[in-house]
Every structure is written in C-alpha cells, then in structure tokens.
Length: 288
Image 1 (spheres, rainbow, N blue to C red):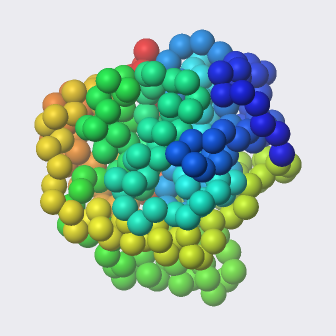
Image 2: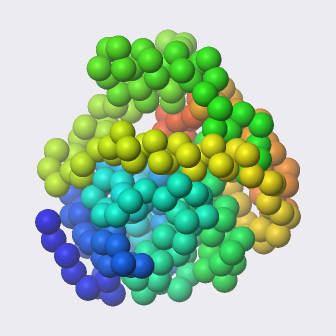
C-alpha cells in the first residue's frame, strides 16, 4: 500500500498491470485510485460499473488510451480499495466523484462513464459543467429510462448461472452467445487476470446491494434535462445489451445536443471491451 501527494505527476511508464494503487483523502473518505499515461494534458477520469473495482477495467482500453492521454481510475466509496459505505443514490456518487477530482487538484477533466458510472458522469456534467470538458458514455442510459433497475428474466438467468457455476457472471452479462461473443468473453476475462499484484478487494454483497438501490432509484427518477449537457459526448454500446437495453444509448445520443453514437455489431454490454481495437481510436479522436 502506497500513498503520495495528490499533485505529484503520474509515472509515464506505468501500465494497467503495473500502475501502483494510490490513495487520497476526499470528503472524509480515503479513495483508492491508479494513474497511468503522460503527466500532461486534461486527464480522463474513469467511473466504473455495478460491482466493479479498478481491477475490472479492460487493460487494452486503459493502456490504449494511456499511450496518449493521462488516465485516472478510481474506486467509488465503499468499493474495492476505497473506504466508507456505498451511497444509495447516484447523486451522492456524483458528489464523491467531484470531491475526488478536487482532491487530486484537477480543475478540468474528461469523464468516461460505463454503465452505473455513466449515470454518475451525467450528473457530474450537469451539476459541474465547468469541470467536465468532454464525455464518453458507454453501456448506459438516462434517468427514468424504462427497465433500468428491473431484474428482467435474461439478467436473472445469467446471474443465476454464474452463481451456480461459482464463476464471474460478466462473460454471460457482457457478451453475446454467438461464437464471436463467447470468444470475446474468454479473451476479456484473460485480460482482466493480467494484473497479478497490488489488486484491490472485490465488492462485498452488502456494497452491491446498496449500489442496486441506487440503480433502482435512477430508473424510477424523473428524466433529467439532458439538453443542458453542453459537452461534446461520445455514446457507445453493443447492439444487444442484456443489462441496459441498447435503446437507452440511442435515447442519450438523441437528447444530448452534441452527441455521437457508435453501436458495435454482435456485441453486448461490454461491446467497447470486445471491440477495443476500434473503440480506443474513436475515444482518442473524440477527446482530441
């Protein structure tokens, strides 16, 4: 376990497999995070999905972006290496994200939100518009979107299969059942195992339950005025998202004024990981 002053520059030679886990105090909580990529430029702050920790980001995505951009990944309150109790609202998670960014001494960032992290990124962009330069929203949807927070039959079946087999359910939840999707799932899980040291704890069942409360509340909330998001936004997803219906990505792209939508074929919730070779250049071009 290491710590350092928040203002120090990241190690440019670090990769997703070697970047040390660091800690910073923000809003009374000790947040775990990692940095990689160059020390200059507007950082890209990653906000992750339901139950995820900083060990669950695809290394090809992080390393591909960090070859050109400063990348910061962080564990939410009560998740992974971060202390505290998981908030039960997306708004509270957004407040934590803003506090973490301020604790690093950053005044302008690009936000990358995946799934639950995409909910948080939308709130931050609306409430702190001067903080966010550009947005990337993947595998996510707007507040009040039909089906968000509801355990549909496909989701329950996939989760149950993972529990029965004592395996991570992500291969079932994130990818299609086609030969291409199955192969992509195997490759993705192998990549997640590349980091072998200095990993953070998995999210507890209690933490996951509290996150689920926040997701349900997001699905039941009144729609936000996404027309007020002025940041250029890249929206991306697979064509068959089993967790957050792909039509939610179309809705986001339609309602955010300066948004562009990318949908990947034969792909699901983890489509941006499956198609990382195409997605990374898309993100770099969008953030340039």
